[in-house]
Image 1 (cartoon, rainbow, N blue to C red):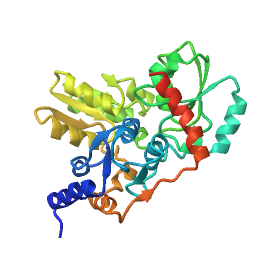
Image 2: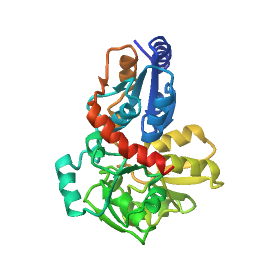
Image 3: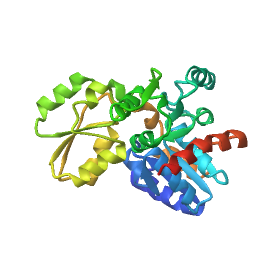
Length: 305
């Protein structure tokens, strides 16, 4: 029988023995983060995968993240830690629907949040992350933008780029949109001294009340650099736990107990163990056509810095 400690020891041994690089998204649980080679957001992890010396990459996250890693590392074996770990937001729009939207907005640059499938990326001009969206949207030469799929992130960016016209779909993260303005009022009343930090995937009425709006990595960096002693965290609740481990002298509260990503929770430490010993996960396979066409939008993102 394993304990958490002995299982982690076995994972560390096997990943070296089998030449596996473990990537863990920040929404994974603490026990998984402790055995990872790299921890971060979805695109940051994919860049780490491309530069890692290992021939096999294990993505502890969701499918679109593993696909992005494969796009940037076509020569490597890329595994998804749990075959059922998808992203509802990434799957909200089909290729056929996006093709029709492009016909309706022929003068628009098609901007895809990185949280999209590789198939959707083949029809897009540029990808953005929550951290890079504002910079890239300001730099794009086009005056009209078709932004997919998250209208909440898109509207947050649009409010700061009034010189451009944005078109959205009714898409977004169903986890972050569980957070309401009522949750903000309750949390503020309970912890009036705390800073409120939220992800731009939250509803506009939530983001408008925050002391800081930014990506997951941005939220964590803000806490590290800020002198406040307590924080209300408006993103996936695993971040509360990770910050508690990293900064035990500060206090963290979840903005909503409902902000839990079920897809991220599918991956367990035993899944990671099975993957590194060659008995679990799913290998990500993309056709050369899809991979090369999807990479165009990612290369465009990198070109904008």
